[in-house]
Length: 159
Image (cartoon, rainbow, N blue to C red; front, top):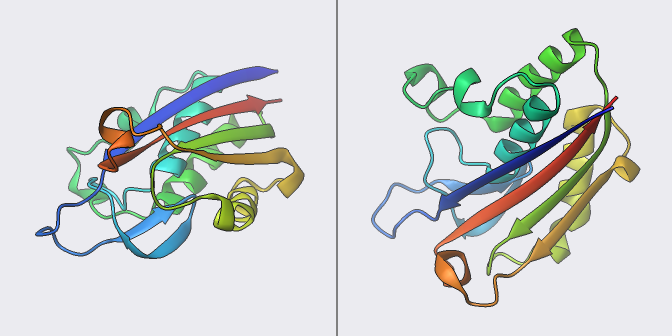
């Protein structure tokens, strides 16, 4: 068994930035401003990718999908995760479980938790019972607590 930890954070787009949807764990959160990022900004999937790659000792998201490469501009993070899952499989691993903590003042994660769990399970090819998603606030502390962005922690177990 191998354990990996992933982390990512992104700021919300400013009012004057081009409109971009907020996507968390492959689920669109309508009515919310998107996140600043080279790809679609799915901070949840980015943290999951880093957890998976870390567990398999295959580098990190930046080494696989560098923001200096225009090929990845606006990329669907679900597609990136699919490519990582292929690499994980080629390395002889399967996902045992995934634990994700989303830290933000908004949107509220609780009402959409099951949808995010289901989407992540589907993308990983595992049962929903193997995926945990938790939403937390930062109690108004720092930039995340001020509502300026979102951060995510993810832990993955590979077998």
